[in-house]
Image 1: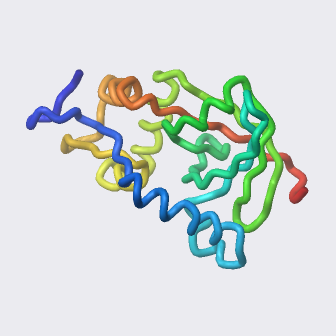
Image 2 (image 1 turned 90 degrees about the vertical axis):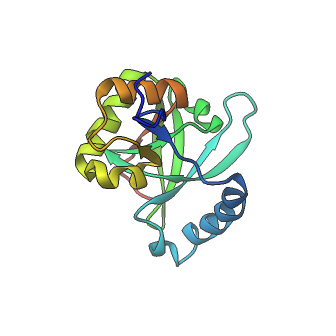
Length: 168
């Protein structure tokens, strides 16, 4: 595994404390579903989907990015597996609930490529904060270092194609 000089990996996943997530998610969920959504639209959306095995309805607050012209959510949360093989999804984005189709991209090679592209777009100095990672080297991470991160953290991409028609 490629290491930074102080023995930390060159790139590592940074997650907020679980307590903060448990408090913040309901608050952000409420904001995203209200007229105040504009406060957080730039970075957050609501994913509405059904469990693959249970059929139970879920609504999840998630960070989003535009990745190669598609809506994308980078995550290693367990709910991502509901998108294996592709499934219908709804998102609340910029105050509108929209239908679409989402699929899970789990290939470390592909997800590392997406991260490399986003790091280049944001600049490696800013990318960590934008992407929930810590870059422990004073340069953009190499492809091998990003692959190491993908394998250790099991990061995936939920790629979402929204229907052209808006609303329900």
